[in-house]
Length: 519
Image 1 (cartoon, rainbow, N blue to C red):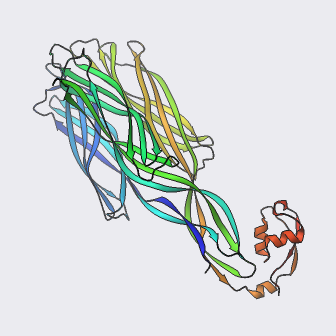
Image 2 (cartoon, rainbow, N blue to C red; image 1 turned 180 degrees about the vertical axis):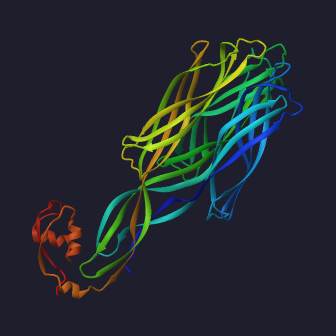
């Protein structure tokens, strides 16, 4: 058995993946401490996971859907809010997984609908789609050299992606907001939203640098009863880092980000007055960092003196095709269909991006989706001016990805980077948005890698049947290496006999071939 030199390439394979949906359709009683409901203004929801456990072939998920409702009370006409926690317990089938495997879990809340049944009861409907993926590390051995001078090798250079870092970690961002001096103290926090925007994650030496901003909105009641509800908006920039051993600036990142937890709390200032809002966000980072490495891959071996018996092993290889970040700007005007009165002022707008479909084209990746917007505003009604509307802005964008084919694998992340809403007039709202589309495209292919090479004596009957001298007409796809292998000679011998160099060989050219193994 000949000794092959091999280089290890670490790759990530999908062991199993599954999609599971949990449907919520519950009637929820308004707590006794809360005022009767007169009209719902806005609703939102998130998912919190208490336990994720893997067993033989199954993943057990335990958590809750947390719905928040902003409403107007029935009698007093006050703005109020309440929170409802709906428990869930789901089992996801993942054949072949075991307790020690690593599960990557993400989810999406769809079709959240909250409506009043009567002043003390709500109907809450939603669908939560869970995406579960179990990855496993595997070592692929690339044959790159053979320590035998008499054996000729055929090689090609390949650039392969090797996984250097694969880990999950969390990034916590805490920011304090101090109220302006002309604002009243906080009596109660009614409503808030916190959205990460313009997130930029870059690998550095043994760490991930995270930059971005938190888009924060808060609605609260002041301590002075005669004052109307107060609201404020802030863009809080942050610059933080996450420890990541083995990380470096030369690595190619693929980092999936999700909001694991976010809260806003009221804190006293130095004088003991309730004038500080503390935004606390925990982002989960699922980090995969690759290094692109070049290898001299051995495709074939032979010697005219012995028979080389090659054993091959099928492996899937991958290389970087393209990384691209592009922006899609969407501008539109939305008509306000409210009979209560003209819009006087916009309070807050929030949104998220949903990709409906992607398709590979000649230019790149065609992405189609919608921006789902919620806009909170006030009308000319001093008693209770708050209203809300929800709308969707469709978009289509081609992400340039030169060389992509239907066999390529790509990972697309879409985030809402910019959002602004302004009043065009009392009936229309002008919306300007920017969607960031970040794509990593990999070329994947199967290669029959040489696993072992064994030397055996030549089949002399076959050799004796071959002529000692042959004139061969070069075909279009021929290389001198292949010709030498077929006629039991060497590339150097062919060049010497014909007085040529390897680069001078062309299709249709006659070559004089002399068999080196004599009868």
